[in-house]
Structures are given as structure tokens and as C-alpha cells.
Length: 249
Image (cartoon, rainbow, N blue to C red; front, side, top):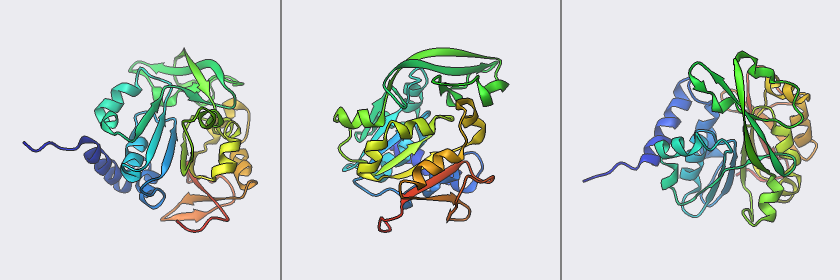
């Protein structure tokens, strides 16, 4: 009997939803132009695993995807639903990625429907809950914290072609903890940058862009194609960064 390949079906449906509906990030649909077979990708803040699934399909059997998500009570469930654990090129890391290694709390917001795990954030030098004030309460979940440079030092990463970061405002801290890896491998990056989230860490959204453009990256926002921009803009939440000196892929 013919069996559907769940990861392939998931990736196809997600691609269609991203392209034609407002329910998923439009940027998910653009990944085929950014990732090639054989690429090594890191998905920081993989949550339900949609990006990890898409990256797994694109990187193929000769590539690898490191799916990083510390809120383990939701991640394994969604990984099974989406078929991520069937993919031999996906490696799961139940850690948070930050500016320095250690052990901290992930603040998980709750409402009457239960935990909103996709809005969880790492409690490191925070100033209140910021954009999560709409939730009646939070639960602190202790998690191990690693850095991107630490993953390289531990031998998990020997190259890095594509990096996606979505950590609800802590994106600059991920970059700080991955400075050596970024400068060494010069990956293409897709990063969520929202001022409402960065405010809880007391830094401006444009500081993320400045950190990367100061290291030779060009910033793009999606508007009927990836368009060069100089700063965070009102119509976009996710931004593409590519080394200025790299050849077109």
C-alpha cells in the first residue's frame, strides 16, 4: 500500500499556505532560493518545526538541519505531527541559544487555552514581559543555554550555510554568542526583528541590523521579492541578511 511521505506533504502544504495565505510567514515560501542541497542549516527557535521541515527538504540527504528549541514539552509533539523525526538529516537540540552558556528560565506565557509556547522568551537581562503583557501569567521553565559558537566548539557544526533566528526579542544575544561562527562561515541569515519584542531586552530593533551590516552584510525585506533596505521597516517582521562580498547563490 502506498504511504504518504508526511514530511514532503507538510513541506508542500506549508509552502502553499505561506505563498497564498496570511497564516504562515511569506518568507517560508522564499527558502528554495536561499538553501541548496548539501547545505548545513541551523533553525534557532524552531517551535513547531515548520522551518526545520522546509530546510530539511531543501538541504536533502547530503545536508543537515540543526533544529534548536528548548521548550521540550511542545517540540517533540509537533515534531512527530509534522514528521520531523522521520528525517535523517535533522538533529534536535533541546537547548536555548544565547549570548553565553549556562542555565536560565524560559518564560512561557499562558492564557485560558494553555501555554503559548511560540511566545516564550529567555529570561536574561530582561525588563518585564514586554510584548507578552497580554497574557495573564507566565511559567518559568529552567533550560540549558548554549551559544552558537559553543555548538561549533562541541563539534556539532563544522560549517554553517544558513541560519534562521526567531527568539522573541533575543536575536541580538544569539548573534553575540555566535560572533566567531558568523565571521568564519558567513552564513545567509533569516532573522525575525520586532521592536515590540526587543524592548523587553532594552535594545532597539535596528541594533540587530547595525550589528550585521557593520560586519559586511546586506539587509533585505520581502516586498514582492527581497528588496534591499537600510533599517527595520513597518511592513516586515523577518529580514534576510547576506554577505555583500558573496557571489549570488
